[in-house]
Length: 281
Ligand SMILES: Cc1cc2nc3c(=O)[nH]c(=O)nc-3n(C[C@H](O)[C@H](O)[C@H](O)COP(=O)(O)OP(=O)(O)OC[C@H]3O[C@@H](n4cnc5c(N)ncnc54)[C@H](O)[C@@H]3O)c2cc1C
Image (cartoon, rainbow, N blue to C red; front, side, top):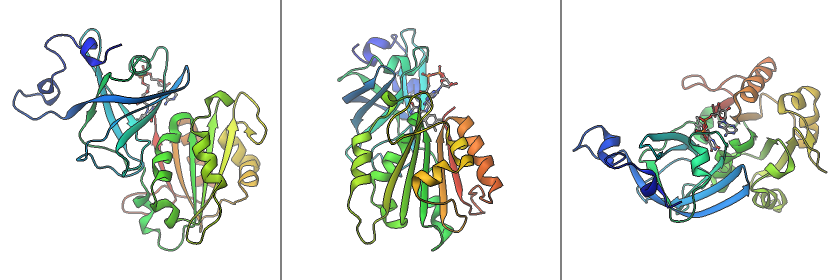
């Protein structure tokens, strides 16, 4: 495939089309794909260069677009994997065979182009816990599948390692082939303890497979049974713990209800709490 040039129909998809006016500046730029990695047929990562003017906070997402063979402009939200200081913008996505957007991106290669809106969005960011004072010392980053993406950005940034004493990443995937970025995650888990730097541990759970060292089952069930805390070696404690939930809305909703029953509250703008969430659909 040769990028949006081959996908765009004549007269569609130019900058003016996106801005809604011929003279208004475009809301997006075209960016060339400079790196592609396919984890398996259903999961890929890619990078484009980050425009120096594009500034975001770790945990935010970008709106990405393409133009189909029939000239239709499609846009979807994707969490940014790279840290704010990196030169690239990296994305990690599921390639759904019938997905209008992702099935097309799944065929992209180096040199193809994709659209990126100028403004990042989203509130799955550490500053949401800034009002928590000295209290929260443990951060639980809880994800299903590609919900891992914003946590990679947060973990690649220095701030989280200073702000918390303990970071527990909980990742649920279907089977062992769906575990991406494992080398990077293991490197954080294996890093020697250092003063002023959070300890990191990772709990993997597989829903349709088994692997040595991984749990089996869905995250809410593992919380209810106590298996998650046992594996993490940490307890869910309203005075210490803060949570980010990201990915499958069923997991997000179940965890929200479970945590609420244990005395944790959603973090709201005027009412600091324990939980912030990002639903992917
Ligand atoms: C704020 C935000 C951030 C997002 N970040 C990411 C990201 O970093 N990586 C990513 O892969 N997706 C992410 N998504 C989802 C993404 O925007 C698209 O919905 C997804 O790629 C499917 O688009 P599609 O057109 O291919 O499928 P569609 O034809 O739109 O089909 C949508 C269906 O696909 C399923 N689905 C959607 N997203 C996923 C997913 N991530 N994993 C498994 N099943 C899914 C759901 O059943 C959904 O109803 C994010 C969504 C939001 C709202």
